[in-house]
Image (cartoon, rainbow, N blue to C red; front, side, top):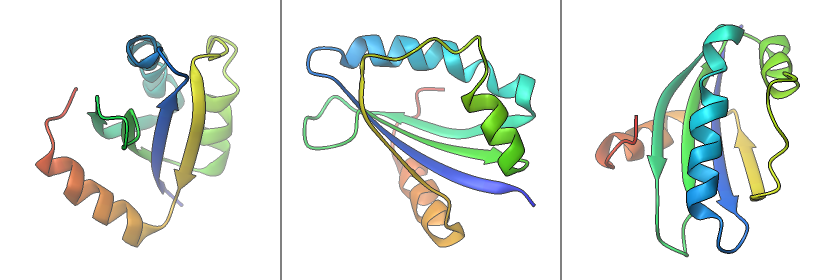
Length: 104
């Protein structure tokens, strides 16, 4: 069963730009795992996550494969990652992201 996943990312202090560059690189791997980035929003406000990403992923096995892909370098620039996979939450985040300026 497909999974809709919302990811909120926060960079370590002073590494917001590096986080965005890192995410540019690792998000390219999604296609290899039959997953899709639905929306990505980038923030420069300290009160909000630095990135919010919404994905559609085929299964838990697909997600596990993406997260453990050896081509994904470690991310010491990431301070906090939160994931949610509730359909209602995903729809709410998707609506909010549609009103924000997308990065991709």
